[in-house]
Length: 112
Image (cartoon, rainbow, N blue to C red):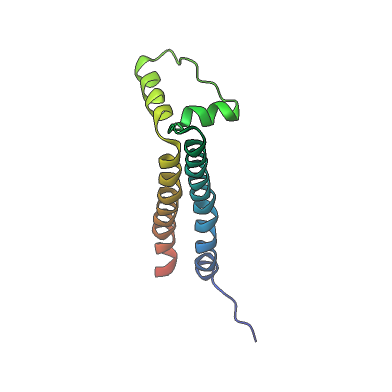
């Protein structure tokens, strides 16, 4: 006879899958960017860094001034970050944040 699982048990079973679904695409994309850079370097002999600005342009998102000089500088800094490093940070950081939030919010359920 099957026993009924609690909500926390079901969430615990799915947590790893959710974290993998969040992390894997970003980490694979980061590897793809580095591989693309390596192949380009092998062909041309010049290392061309890829930045977030190129990624957003590829998505069709153009940056225009917000009217706030400080915010424009922050956006410029983000756009100048290396794409592969940012994707690795997202692939590692986002699952850590999700796991922390999950642990925090299910802690009350575990104690009952």
